[in-house]
Image (cartoon, rainbow, N blue to C red):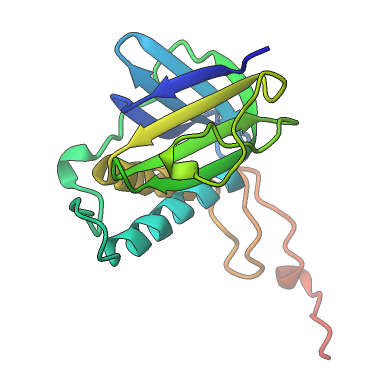
Amino acid sequence: MSPIVHGFDPPERFVAGTVGEPGARTFFLQARAGSRVVTVALEKQQVEALAERIDELLDEVMGSPETEALIPAVAPQDLTDDDPLETPITEEFRVGTMTLSWDAQDERVVVEVFPVGEENVGLGDAANEGEETATEDEGSEVLLVRMAAGPARAFAQRAGKVVGAGRPSCPFCGEPVGAEGHLCVRANGFKRREP
């Protein structure tokens, strides 16, 4: 069976967002082109890692002499997207693994998102030379997003804001503090053991 590829080349919108209150949020990636919207659920740490890696990849590519495209050092102001996720939110799958690459021929960031339990296989484009390509027996679904550097920086910036908008950290122990507070080991008389 061939995998279902939810392809966006490029998306009109590709964002990370949440639903729920801090401490009980569900994280999503959402891509839109016209009336077609694909939403996948993932963990906070996955959003954070993807944003960091996109920034690192673009910083690396920006310094490469082979790159002809203009790679912005920060997200362009006109690409800032603080709007909520598109509704209704219908989860296609829960994210297991993701791959990130730079397509040097088209000078685009390529993000491949696979469901939990699926193999981390490339789809066989110029960005993935030397990697396996998906065959009929591999993978059931994948979200494939190809975007220019500016929108990729904007995605990373928004994702960083989304991750940082959670529960505040305790100034004593660094653990998250919920609306009901938390039992802080350091503020309640417990001392750290000295080595």
